[in-house]
Image 1 (cartoon, rainbow, N blue to C red):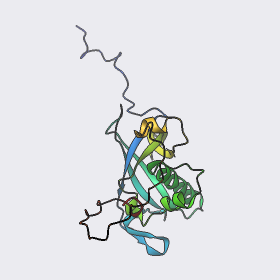
Image 2: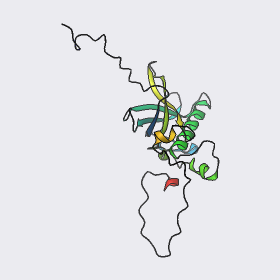
Image 3: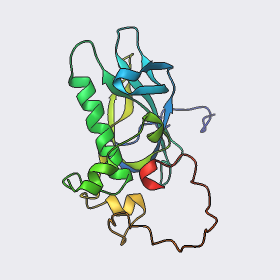
Image 4: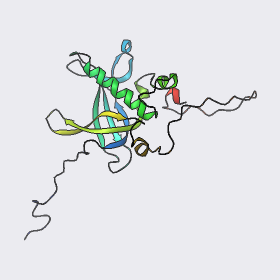
Length: 199
């Protein structure tokens, strides 16, 4: 007697990988490593120092919507390598792309407003950041395929608005606050976890 639960020759393989090149909105959670170097601006215990001396952010990226919602992708964001500057430069490039994507700014825009939007007070500003990522495939320590995030997608990409959920809105620079009346007005507290530029 043969049936679904006796013959597994026609069962699908479960590679469990998101296809390379998929665009998805993700939220970054930094898994704290407890390593600080205030001279580099690495504070708050977010950085991790590996046994080789490499320093990185241990990123957990959760897909927030779409067919792969709730899937997690683990990627290291390089801060320093004893082998040279390449890994740190790739990490800086990824963070710049993440900020551009999250804040809706073109990579080509060099206006004072966008330059200010690319500043962070510390790694806490990146924890919880939502942006559009291009999913890639790399290898884990055992040589097995795994999903990675190596690039963020900015508003320059034709599918950015649809994936980010801002279709039809376009980029709007932060508006100037309206003049306050002379009488004191009660104000709501700043939203916790929001970067200074967004408050």
